[in-house]
Image 1 (tube, protein in one colour):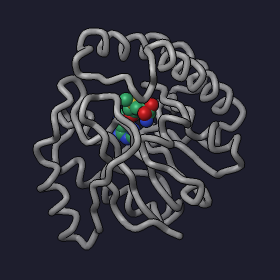
Image 2 (cartoon, helix red, strand yellow):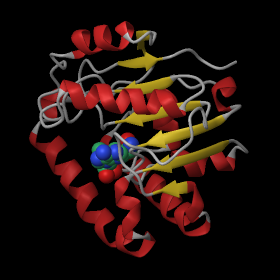
Image 3 (tube, helix red, strand yellow):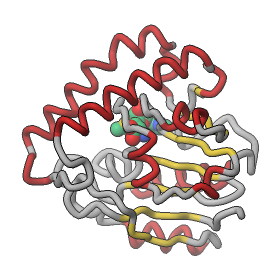
Image 4 (cartoon, helix red, strand yellow):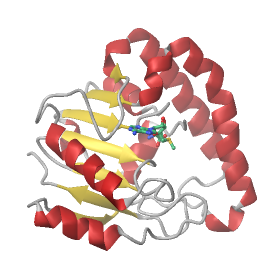
Length: 220
Ligand SMILES: C[S@@+](CC[C@H](N)C(=O)[O-])C[C@H]1O[C@@H](n2cnc3c(N)ncnc32)[C@H](O)[C@@H]1O
């Protein structure tokens, strides 16, 4: 379970102020600071992740080891990462630590904003949010989650969103290679009438991972 900050989310998903006018769901939210950061700006957001079923105390216990595992993976594959966006490893670490604190404070204060739920089934009504963001879950784990699973997961996020679903990154964890079934998956979704677009974003950490997939149309 990793812990990206609100600032990283803004960049990964090219979020502007209008995107924060409605309710935003962070799906596979982990220990991200997105909901806390949105709340601090007066925006409305919630997150879903199966791990929220553990409760805040157990999450706090497991977070340091999870974050250390992520850092070890980066240390073992340094050539697959670029640091321009962060500026330095120290700055990235600082963002992680702050995001984790903001997440822990927010989930304790506002537990109802954190749904214990996992794709491909979300216990939410059709069209109940204005945008869904999905960071480092789909495509990241394409080694173990196949094209059919991705299709079901995207259909489900599209069901609960009145507007767009945005997914980042479009490469696999570990080798940072593009996902082989991305084109075929987009064809599957287009055949169901869903509009799919690959868009550049102002963020790159895994080398070459500077695009997101959007599904559906913005609600503006
Ligand atoms: C690499 S973490 C990313 C966390 C956060 N989005 C971020 O970018 O910092 C992936 C998250 O997806 C969650 N996850 C795993 N399976 C899931 C599922 N089926 N549905 C929703 N979330 C899931 C994990 O528990 C984990 O917190």
